[in-house]
Length: 178
Image 1 (cartoon, rainbow, N blue to C red):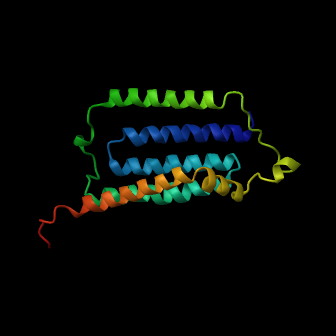
Image 2: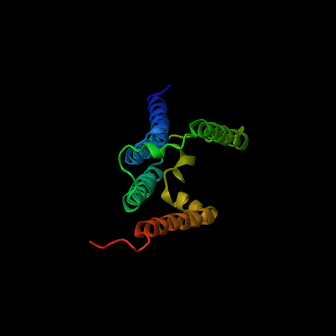
């Protein structure tokens, strides 16, 4: 194993560990902060894979927008910030079973879908890699030509979440104004 391989494995362990802490902590704000750690380790993994553009997109979109949206949603809905016993529904074992089944399904789909396909990471000095490796244009073209529909669906989903947070924060309008 090389140095980047060791760093990548350690970042994977941090990502998985903080992801587990996101769903197991009993404090809502701590869960959002563990999500920042998970997204940050994922972005660092992209840096190890020399995908700088994807790493910055990960930081800007997920850490900079999604987590901030979650924190604003927590604050606007007046959710309990500290420990709360009513946040635990008692379905930990069912949730664990669903998580393991979903993870197994995802791994199976990826293994079947990419069975036998290898993507060689080449040296920056080699001629076939110079044409497209590390270029944001290739990634942008792929996103806005091939993946434009999922991109737009995600933007509508985030807009719906923002509108939902605003509606929930307004209350029923009968509260006394101080």
